[in-house]
Image (tube, rainbow, N blue to C red; front, side, top):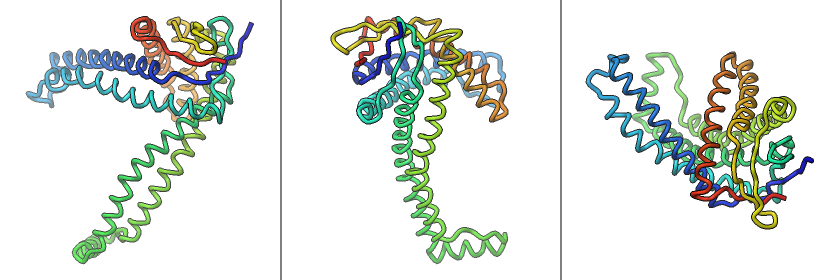
Amino acid sequence: MVDVKEIKSIKLTPFTRMSASIYGILGFIGAVVMLIALIIVQATGLIPQIGQFNLVTGLGIPLIVLLPIGAFFSTIVVSFFSVLLYNLLVPKLGGVKLELEGNEVEKIPVISFSLIQSAIGAIWAFIVGLVLAAVISPLLSFISAVSTMPAAANITANITNVSGATLPSGAEIGAAGIIVALVLIIGLPILMFVFGFIWNALFALFYNYIVTRVAKIQLDFGQITGSLHELKHIPVLPTALAIALVFTLLGLISGILSGNYGEFITNFITYFIETALIAILYNYLAPKIGSIKLNLE
């Protein structure tokens, strides 16, 4: 019997702690793989241009420290604010719904999944655009002001006389700064929402009508009290296979559009390994640091 559940809210601290821990470990694993690759490159002399520079001590060993720390703290920020946004948006847009049969996700309702995911992406795009605009717009304004000075005007005139190319005036540079700011603050979030909605809708559609014939995401929820549940365990192979197949299909579409027809193969390998590692780490860490807790209704 299929049971429709809506994720009404996600507990901030358990989700953030688990996400940061997983990606901190993945960062360490990635750093070890890179260190091994650098040792091989150093030992075989594949890049003679590096001369006496020691790749292992100069790059590999610092990565062992910096990559896990960077992944851990950046994931704290992204996870915390993403979940905060999710919890704030659910009363207005509705939460992600899952059609469950036992521990298997039979179907992901398209609209609810796509709407809130794309809304969160658009808000993040607005924040990033605001930061970029705060840096780029004053810089262009400064260049505009400098270009109006007599010395700068003479240099511009000399360049125009020699090359024949007309350089933008101070007013044009200032106007460009305003346009760039508007594109970053308004245009970027709109694009992120539209393309994010399409991408997430395709994810749900591919999963619902193609991937579930081969494999299904499996999530073992346990009820704590009332609507509060915990994600106790993630079966590794079926979940990794399902996620990898969805991204394989998305990679096929992307490859057709971009001409990179091998993207779907790399997508399958990458997402299968990544999802499997995340599930393994989650299952290992959940009893030790606490599982993800969420309100399902």
